[in-house]
Structure formats: C-alpha cells, structure tokens
Image (cartoon, rainbow, N blue to C red; front, side, top):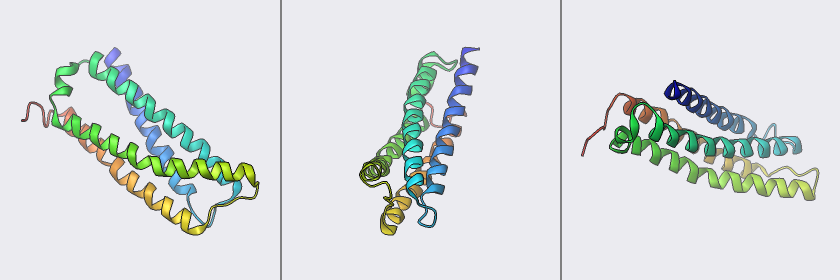
Length: 153
C-alpha cells in the first residue's frame, strides 16, 4: 500500500509540475502581459519550485521505500537519464525564475510595470525549451518502469 500511495503522490506532483509549466507558458504572451500577469507568474513560479522540491523528496522516498527497492533504480540507466533530464529542466528553469523575480521587484517599484516584448519573447523561448526537456522525463520513466536499462552496462 505504501508503494501505491507513493506512486499516486509522485504522479500527481509530476502532473502538477507540467500544469504549472504550461500555465507559465500560456501567461508568457506579449498580448496578455499586464502587471497582474507579472504577479501571477511569480505565484506560479513559486509553486513550480515547491512542486519540484516535493517531487525530489517523494521520488527518492520511492527509490528507498517503494516496492522495487533501490537496487532496481540505482542500477537502471533509464532512471539516471530521467534524473539527468530533471536536472537539466532545473538548470534551464533558473533563467526564467531569475527574470520573473526581477519583474516582481520592478513591479514593486512601479505598479504599472510590464516587461518589454523582447524580454517576454526570450523568456517564452526558455520555457519552451524547458517544456521540451521536461517531456523526456515520462519517456524515461516509462522505460525505467519496464526494466529498460536495468543492469545495462
């Protein structure tokens, strides 16, 4: 039962991450950017960070206390590819987070602040790259769950 609960929580968090990332991308449009949108982006980005931390905790609890045990995961190349993809997503997300934080600061100084069109376009590209790498995570997860990469070496 513990394994089932961990799997359910793990999947719900991953879907939450995907939803928040998609919402950020949807908000990151020059035609709809407003001071309120900048505030909302800050909230979404905060939740994105919290969900990312939660998925790490739950994921590693699954590795150590789930039904398959650490041997299955730690000796599986697909698991490590999934971890690497997650790490790359995390690294890519630094740029958008830093810009959104800067926008939040600008908004506090000027209640009418809206980022420039080139800034919005640039950040939107970063989010698209992040989403594309994020899409690799369930691919590696499906491979891992089926034993692809286990004991390979």
